[in-house]
Amino acid sequence: MDSIVISTAYITLGQMLKEAGIIDTGGMAKWYLSEYVVFVNDEEENRRGKKLVPGDIVTLEDGTKFQIVAK
Image 1 (cartoon, helix red, strand yellow):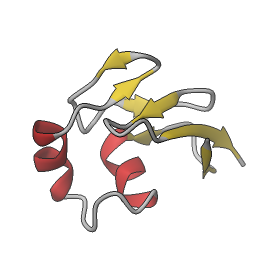
Image 2: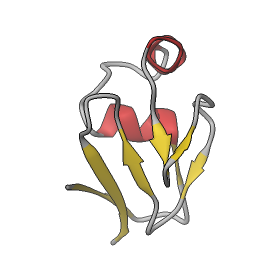
Image 3: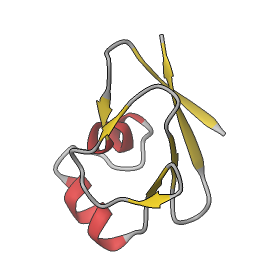
Image 4: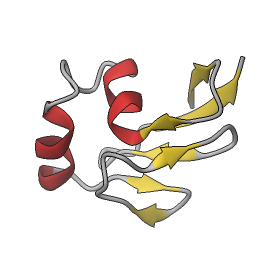
């Protein structure tokens, strides 16, 4: 499981996908979430503005997992 370290209270799902290198630009988030299944804490999520906080786990369609961690 990879970690995404944040220094703020939260990061949006779209920003997290960009930070993880899954997408190249923030604008691609809407497309990515419409084409691929993404889970946040084992619940399907398709909102790019979903706020992720430390402790949240994001799972991509291929099984790759990322945990949000506070700096």
